[in-house]
Image (tube, helix red, strand yellow):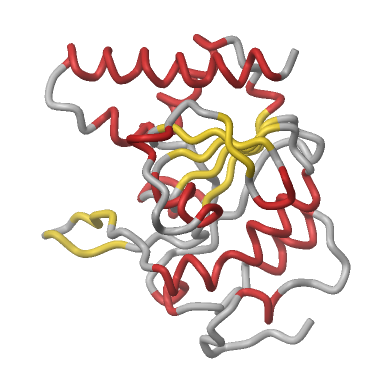
Length: 212
């Protein structure tokens, strides 16, 4: 596969001819499908078993994930691990990834603050997510937050109205949407965080029941 140095408008230009998660991860490291590669430290590809029964899709890597090159290892990822354990979903059954594979951020003093990816950036990165879905073939897809859900179901989807409900994702995969763990961390107080955490566990318990 020829390496590109300019933005092309789609990750499709960087997909390897032979598809495996290892090949995809290596190819994604050189992706220039949109301009976000210029600001991110590195591509953060999905991670988990190739035969995972559950695929969880977030919006994009955060600050810690961008530096480490691994998804869901920061505060939101640690909260997700707690919620999975509380719901009885085995972490070894889960493949985690993001709709956008580079960290989009804005400077605020010395800090890098998350910036929401736009539709062009999400669409440019979609070939990676589609390839992951094709290879892993999960029994269940869980979208964490609006960006992930809208990437698969369109911009009109609202997590607030349809969270915890079974829907049909592309390729007829059963899909459930819930909040992103980072939204729980932003709750105003401990009582609100516990309430939102319990609601996330309830949504993940629906997933656990479907895996029996």
